[in-house]
Length: 255
Image (cartoon, rainbow, N blue to C red; front, side, top):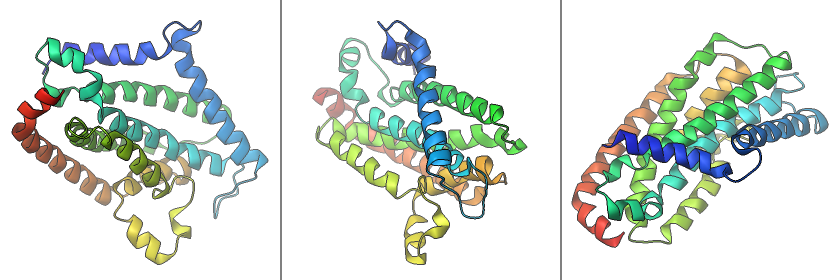
């Protein structure tokens, strides 16, 4: 694995998003700041949205953002990683690249965006007088679990997008549907029992719920289902490598 290449690609991916603009890197702070303020003001203040059992003015806004920030990092990681072999085919053609490591630069790039957005979110909460708990220290663990799953899925789709280019559009549609099957804009407990039994199979349910536990309810998340997600993600990575070893030559030829 060429770590220097992965780090360089991650650096370029993050910096080139705003290259040529007057503010440059500062836009990575401006966009999350505006989005977070919009969600906090519209859903917390103007719409008067409230969480069941909570009287906080900003309760629903915090609930929404606490789910959206990790979900965005996860969804972007998978959807962008699914086309990484095609996007970097010029590099793959020129030098021998360890293909399984290539999606890692997207994981790193999206992680930088996640950290920037999270810091802005925490700053706004701090300025608004929001109380924090020590459970915030568990966020790196939660993020690691979700990104292991993100890498596993992204690598899986990337191998087949090479052969079936339309699959990248299917992945986008899957995540549009998946979003609404994850309790980000609604509360899991308000769903009827049959819907709860279906959603319990969603691996991102336990991840997003853990962020809600930390930010909104300030309690220790349940690590039982999170552990299952991590184990399932590691097993999927093993399956990915088995498939890759069988298809590596064909993948390189089709690229």
